[in-house]
Length: 166
Image 1 (cartoon, one colour):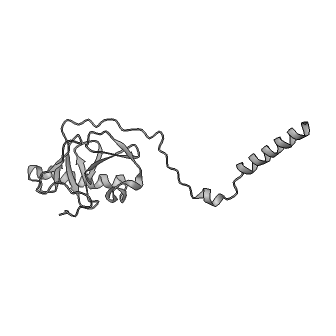
Image 2 (cartoon, rainbow, N blue to C red; image 1 turned 90 degrees about the vertical axis):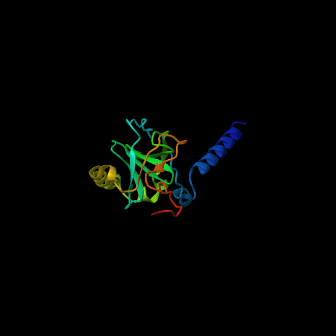
Image 3 (spheres, one colour; image 1 turned 90 degrees about the horizontal axis):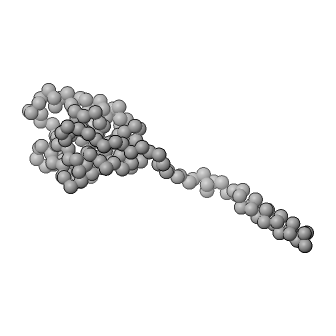
């Protein structure tokens, strides 16, 4: 009886060992798991008045000027860069949802944030210098999803991929 128990235990142990040792590792090497646990959600955006969004021709996105936040608008969504992560929301006030880098629109993916900030500062200086006579494409941002962004110039903001670029 003891011999039979030992034989069964040895068979179970050998079966477990064969199951635990990977036979074909190339299939395992192709697995790509991307879980963003612990990505800190950004705090709420607090500004005195809705920010002005100006169009940056080179990356083909709108950017908020006169605020301390990296907020962009493209394709009907607001994008916010915070502590090394990207987020999107239907309005500049949030509620922000984490975005993986490869899911960003091309205009945001193409440039590093530092370069986007340079573009923003250039356009901010131009708009500030011209004041109310600023002729660049712009609109006033909306804080929530039920409010539609409306550009100060005819035609409204650019809708990514809809062919109405000027």
